Image (cartoon, rainbow, N blue to C red; front, top):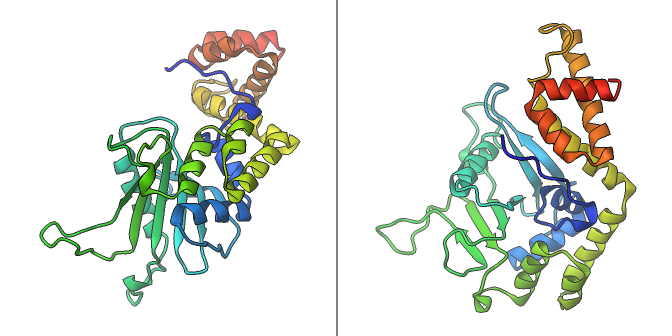
Length: 287
């Protein structure tokens, strides 16, 4: 099991963190301005943003949780994701995400035309260069190998944005500023940005960081992450019985909260790995 990271303060998060990104982009106007900069045109969304949206074709199959999802007034679908680490599978992951999204877009029945599938843009923002070409932006569409310039026109576009690009001449200055700001979402970086839209984005970031509501949600998200690591290891008082499982969940949740409040992150890591240590900590806190 990997060592457990200590939670950062909400004020220290950047927009590359999934929690801050989803919380900031929950606001429809903020997502519109970010997408407008990325797309190079004004984007007007037609419905409330969906953050942390889960897609699953069958209950027993693997699901994905999308960071931010919406549709614009031209029926174009957007999935915007941030990825802090290079997991080595992002190209294949984008394929899986696209397949799951597409599987939900048409109603059942033989009379439904595939031409009803909307244009789709999957956007991944990363602080690394997957292909090492120095680009801020890598845009992929399906193209014929034998006939240059012949595209499949299936409506699918995948965009990978690199916050550390070096080829400034191939993107707009505003997009380069946005990507730099996403990686370093500080007051200092915002002051260097000339874009009024990025100033508005920074104001939204400041509002989220100062919000008590989002502060509570952030700590709850950490509790859930730790609980997931402990899940399945807590035996409970009556293994296999529903009341025993419920009691085990309650104890883990309470223990996680108490250890987080006390800043005892090393004990959190030990509790996630060692049932005997977890039981001793529960006794210590009278749980």
